[in-house]
Image 1: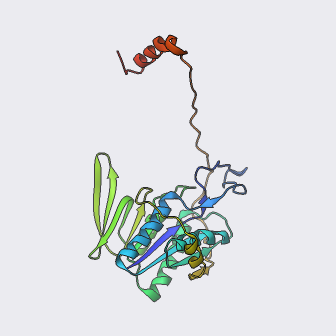
Image 2: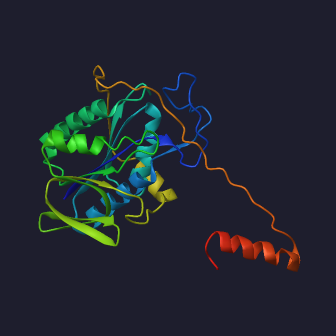
Image 3: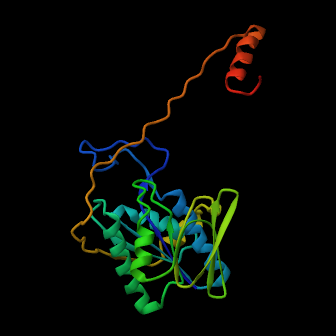
Length: 255
């Protein structure tokens, strides 16, 4: 089978996010980069599926020249080859991103046949648009299920599981299909030194797509407010017992 996984170069999660003065982009000069945890699981799943069924795995990204690093990391854990849609580093909106990916998919499939499965992270760790995977599926006319915590392939169909309150919803899709996955789908492996050495020799196709005029307008970016935390000292030693008991009564633990 053939599996394509799409990733995006994003600031390392957990880092302090600072916006540019015009609130239109993230200030990245002091940040490290990776792919989002959802996409790490997508890469791992692509490798596992090809290990199980045979075939070829491909990783694709749209981003600046430096995104080569994220593609090589994916190839270091087992992805067979990469496709880099190189940009000048400006953020592309979801419509333009999906359009470029669709063109790249069609070009690749002309020579090698259709991808049985195209895998996206459920959303990117920076802008969190939740759109690209769905737009690609719609443009290609392929079935799509989002927010998955389990994926398996058997007999030309993909079995997909979504977590819901109290259980899981299960969907079966005919292949070829598009899925978006969540962190926790699997436990991603880390690149080894031999894997990194092999990755440097794997094929990486680089092209420069033309950016279309945007039909979407960004108003501004906002960094979510952090949750404030504080600690209250109720007393010391045995003398604190009445205050602890009163607090437990207030929150309903005891009566």
